[in-house]
Length: 378
Image (cartoon, rainbow, N blue to C red; front, side, top):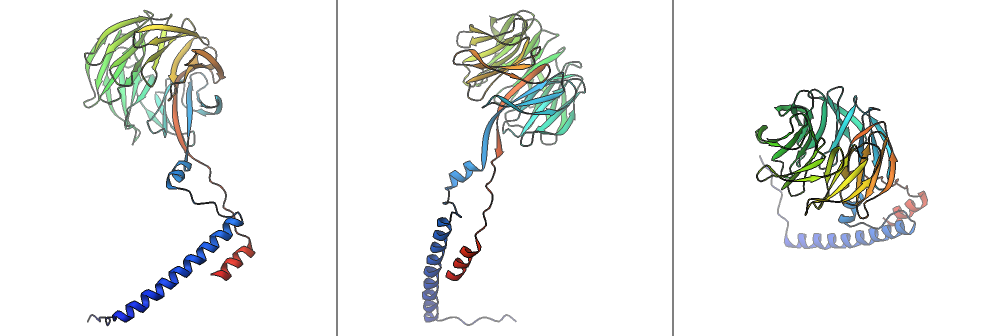
């Protein structure tokens, strides 16, 4: 049987509401006094706004990751101070490195053990090693971060990695000796430079099939897509030029002469400049993408391999294979402003914003006598 409680009269409710109101006012005064005492004693900081609290919860750093192919590690550079903060052991002969869009993972191709090392960027430690094809060379991560694409130079394939499970979910046959790889901003296409076939394969990411093959210059190596996805730039090592591909038609619409042995290429965030490492000339060619002409040439270290532009477009980081260092180019003046020693034979490089938890201040305990005063007030 359900026992019902007797209804309370309106007078009962009125008396209770008045009592609660008096209690609420008294507690508010007590808490206000207590907070004032705590702040006077230096124990409680003023309350932060939600926006400030969110901003303080994490710190953004620009980090450059450099794959050192002969020392089997990755140098981690603080791109704000241009100093190496640590070196991470990875697999054998690391060739390239890419970071996912949210900056939580870095992927490193290990050419001699046929794996991809997965680095947790918060701790700078390797958390997984993914078996891929024969002699992985370069890696690119899709814009949504769920897929990574790895060129395998000795078996003419591209491995498709599911970054959630860190497993290869597909293998795509492309041209002979694939090296460079880039994903369009939409994530719908992947462009692969086939060094031994003098072509670029175009992959449809929905079906993971090659839907087009584009003839370019001889021995193409590096490949990059501009920010709006309309142009692809291919460094043709054998013909000392850069092929410019229109992605709407997948045809070469221009060819730009650069220095000897162009190997790597990178486009700045607003798409106005492309930077090409002239591997045999020890220079970087600066291309104006509006006119497709070289507007400057910057001398760097010995046998420059790969360039990477920082997120705000003010610096270009260039790995120098035979110098064991990284040249930092100021894009406003097109001059080398710093040279950073790294590991042996640095090859691939990327620069990305990495968000890490900010250190929290230690909790300060209240002195006993202050606690007693607060207890007496309450």
